[in-house]
Length: 204
Length: 204
Length: 204
Image (cartoon, rainbow over the protein chains, first blue to last red):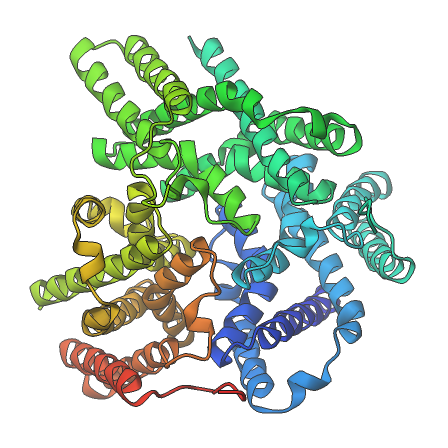
């Protein structure tokens, strides 16, 4: 189980980093910007969660292979023609895996540290979504999770509660984790496919 | 005394959250955005103060009734016609109470943790004003406390020093707290009423 | 040696604070904004580094003469004609000293706290450059270190590694520090003089 989780986590880190780097290239940033935005998108949510819970050393300080990977990606991304060839639509699925893994693991860590279900669900959502919010703020945009876009943070929130419920009902950690994770990935893919939003613009 | 303080604190949290939610609605955000901006405006200043002083668990983690309240407010705010009916002018008074309570209690906490008057005054101002600054940054605006607007942070700063002085002269914690708080609320209301600014635009 | 380092550090703090205040004045901010942006530019990088490593009390809380100095500078800057008379070109050299001192000392602190060379180099760059990035974000601009501008963060990164290498080869802390610092200052001055960039705009 831990190995599978780490692989899923790496998929999420890579997908989030790529989504950051695509935005950085669109904003015409240099390699330093591409690396920083990639780093912040992939690891910013977990960093904020760790700071909020005073959980040290931070995730990326303990797992330095992750910033090293992101740095290598930024170099390749900046100096090859790769950037122009990855379309955002291609990262919807790995991004959904990242959202799922980060949310559930963030919430689980909060429970392990003794927090309530409600606080753990907030910290799970923070882990899953704040990297993207920081990316947008540094790129001088209103974060997309706040816009009337296809649902994202709400799915993370619902997935955390589903995970708590399954954990409580089924008394099986790994089964609960699998259900929570699958729910988030499937719901996110459905939200993109069927254009599900919490609210719509009146002049839409 | 503690009960009165907690009631005043709740008034401040509610007023700050509403001011955040009004801005989020103006920016046409969905319910996730309305909740997040409300949360950040109400609890962001205290969170930053706690992080700066390594004071854990954070205020909102210890008092989870406050994020729960803000979440409920965000749902009502997003799905009722309420948003359009609260005019910003109506929250000037509760916002002034929030500024006063947050500033004085932030400064007092810093003193309790052994910091100097100067550091405590900075942390008091941070507690009172940085929620609003974070709200404006996330909404992609230059924070209003930095603009040539009616004085806000300066009143918080002066109020903290008045509180320290009264505490030192009067040797009565609750009297000093009352004076500092009243000063901030009255000065802020006067600043709005009589349009008091630190500087004006030359082309104003 | 420590005395010289503290003097260089003060030069860096003053240069960074001035660069922040110049931007704040260009954005037409009031004295509160001038102080806050000056503070964030000068002390924001070190604050973030300390938070990441859970290193308390924060640098500016331990050295309160530095925020006091920045507050005094902000008052003079706002109420004298000084602001209009300092041209940005005049602070390129003290800014380069600040970049050098902050980067090397940030990296050294990370090593002292037991982190790897790679993590220490990231924290060194963060110390040297994130004050400026926060300044730009609060002023509602895309941070200049991410733009295709003359190299800045890359010099800090290279300087940290040169410092580690010299420390390892020469076994002399103070010699390694001097070489790393001189490299960053000279390379930065050369980058500005000869317009050295990592990448250029295609339509440049």
